[in-house]
Image (tube, rainbow, N blue to C red; front, side, top):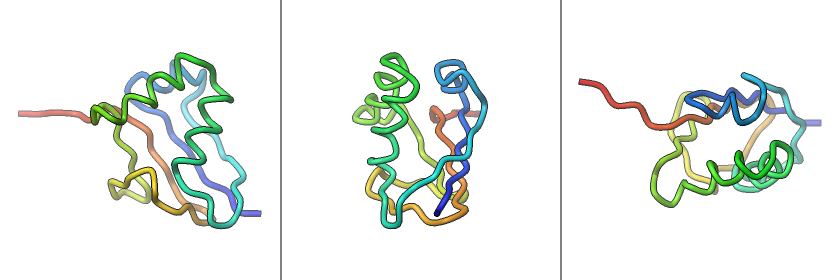
Length: 88
């Protein structure tokens, strides 16, 4: 069965109660579907934080590339959930 490694950064680790986890996925599952599952798994505060994607307050990196919620997950993908970071 396919699996995805998920890392939580920038406050998401606190909301999830962990820094990372490996999750089983089904073939063809999208990131959006996984996010719905994660919201149920980690509670309301986590789900609300994920819902702020409309305002671009959440960044998803799949195998080191920024992706949207329509990205299809594949076996051994590495997903990072974070807030955008600025610098200067």
